[in-house]
Image (cartoon, rainbow, N blue to C red; front, side, top):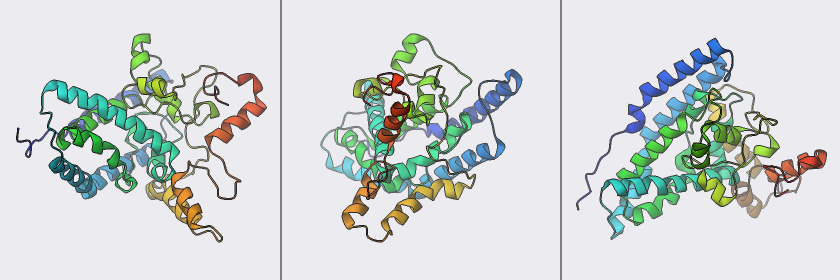
Length: 312
């Protein structure tokens, strides 16, 4: 089958009216019910600006990723075609790919520098979903999708299911929805599960990386349920305190370059500043989520063994 000219609709662009309508509905609900989240004008405008910047960077740099995929497509002898079951399988496997890219985004500082902006809001509402990266191309995480192309999934199909994945994740960025039915919570990513992911509480650090299917977190040991007695506190461990989109987009990249420029650091240190988890320091004074969890348990030993602290 000749798939060289295969195209799929730009589902993310088609979903923009839904995004706008959903934000307006959420804002109205919060205003009327006086619960279900908070909106702060400057914060919401920053999120919208980050979303616009993400679209712009995709237009300017999208050819890099697609060109890489098409190069791989020309190399592979495999071609799975375009049957509905192939699209479905591609969606599931790409969601597994998303889980690992997302996990790298929290455990590898070079990737975190791109992803951190999504966690920079101290509010949690539907505009937070739009707070997307401008620098994803520079993380080279496109490589994680390479096996899908080599297995015979067409690049256009891969980008199509990736768009569907992104659309699904929009609605889970809300406090207006509590818990979904138990069967749904068991399999799918939900607002409750994703609130955990955005929490900066020690319990919730480095948890619930799922895009669509929460089963990946349960399978790989990163699932933590949302607890009523420990409501998520949103934002970064060390909040950056700015609504400037440029600072939000680039502050962690700048921090990496500053760490590289420190006197006395070796080339090995510079490499580790890029690939170790956020918080790592070459002089041993730093520490990431493991240290924060350990310090919390030291002050709250009765929490040892509870969700989020099983390995402390």
